[in-house]
Each structure stands twice: as structure tokens, then as C-alpha cells.
Image 1 (cartoon, helix red, strand yellow):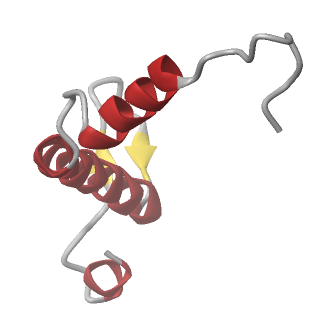
Image 2 (cartoon, rainbow, N blue to C red):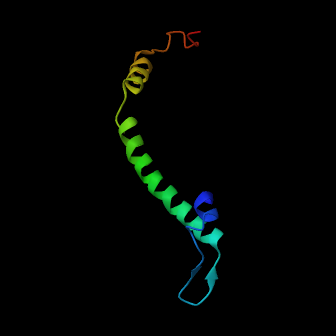
Length: 78
């Protein structure tokens, strides 16, 4: 964005109230919009990379917790 700003490919804007927005403000707006688009696609990619399902790790922890039996004396198993 800085390169486009320096190359004068991004210029100042005038809003509906007649106020002039500086070139840096317009460039920052473009950059923020592009980051939002990027985060949308990153969220989709991360959804497939880390699905919301019970993993085998969770299942193994649950099984380990179910297999733990307190000792008859009531003391810790350590």
C-alpha cells in the first residue's frame, strides 16, 4: 500500500460531506479491508485444518480418566 501511495496510484478522496480524506487515510482503509478479506479465507482454512470434532487425544484422556480407580485404602496412587 505504501508503494501505491508513493506512486500516486491511491489519491485523496472527498466524502459525501465535502471533507477531504488524506491519501494515507485512504491507503489505510484499503489495507484494513484487504486484511479482513485475508482473515475470512484464513478462518475457512483453519476450520478445515482444525475441525471441531472429538479428537483421538481427547478420547485417550477420557479413557485414561475412566480407567483410574482410587485405591482401597483411600490414599493417592502415587
